[in-house]
Length: 200
Image: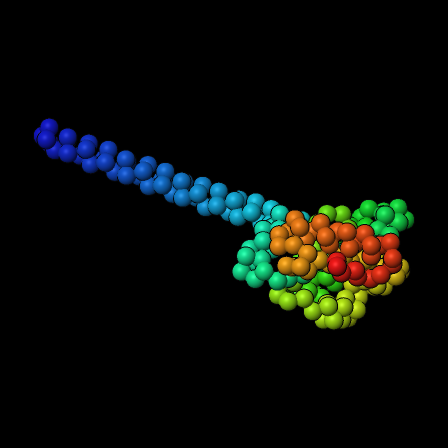
């Protein structure tokens, strides 16, 4: 075997080794990229949805609502608050309190299955109905799905919730404006013991 053949074999072997390691690194990089993309997707999902109820997070709700208002300036923002939630926590414990929040969110999501439903925090929830406000239809849904008064089997309590509503564009054209007005209506709902109060 002459020197030229030996050099050719060495070059071939080195080239094969280089190709092998390059392929190995590419496979590793592709796997890392996929793992990174999966992690990003999970983080985005965690940011978008409330971890306890699966409804939209406050941030995602606001973002989606603002986008809807850009294409359709009419809509109704509802804020719900479960009455006596602290009593449930104090009597049955925080785990049962959390379970109650989950059960209530299921009711709310069924009642407004085609609308935006989000959790504001604690025992407060948000619903946004895009389009012209139909008070009669909203009131019918509240009663049908037991949103403002509902028997809770695990705690054997009949619980109630109050609701404040603000209508766009009459009461505002942004989440901030509508939220401020709906919150005032919610306060009046609590004070007057009305199931739902619409902002004037």
